[in-house]
Amino acid sequence: MKTIYKAAIAIVIVAVAVPFSLFFLYFPFEPNLPCNNVYIENLTWTNVTRINETAYRVSLSGDIIYRYKESWMHTNGNKPLPDELPVRIQVLAGPGGGGVPYRFRDREVPFSETITLQYQQPRSFECTFDLKAGKKYDIPVESYWRGIFLGGRATAIDLTQGEMPLHHELSEEDKGYAIAIAFKDERVREEIRDKEYELGDVSKTQIEIVGPEANFSGEVPVVPIKIGNVTLMVFVDIEQGKVINIGHQWEKPLLIPPPASED
Image (cartoon, rainbow, N blue to C red):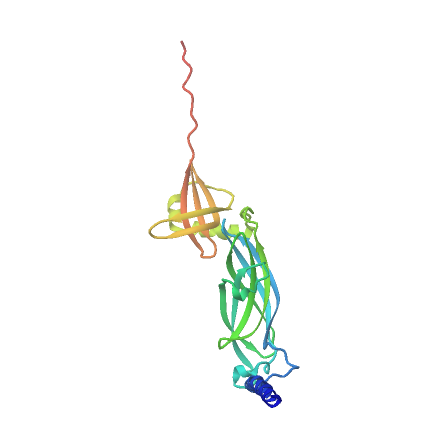
């Protein structure tokens, strides 16, 4: 009975030892090396702007460095990685809070780009993308080579202030750009011609256009140009350098009471 018991123990030990041996043979690992090849550091939100009632436009910057060639060498046939490494940078967005790992949640990929890293040379990066208002997000930023994870880092952002008013401030420089774009438009020049006009204050406003040719919804600069009793409302897209739409505001003439009767 003891012989059978010892034999069973030996079989169990072999059954456990063989897979571990194969694992370390196929995936050589040195305990003094970290598990990542690439490190993403100094993640910082450089811009968070409300673009409409349902979305924010955010910009995230950071530094990325290809620090180790030898970590997880099985990714390259047990050889160190090359000095120049084309890496796919991927930004993920999943619901924040709750203590559940982001990998097991539904997640978006609002930004993805391939860049080439030089060994041990830090490189700065910045990405801009849109997120939904009224949510908390966990934002992991990951690096991949040939589909294999090489390293990453995560940050978080809270966009739960859904009632926050739209941002209507424009810099003087942006106001100048908007005016220049408006006056270059053929339709605006046709309406003005040789007429006298008065330029109003440029501000941002919400606009929504729905039609067969184009659809647009967002907050954009509007350039008011008063000509007589009508004001042209010129809606401008600064990024695209074009006029989105032109509206008209008509002033009602003052009602002049009839002359008093002499009777």
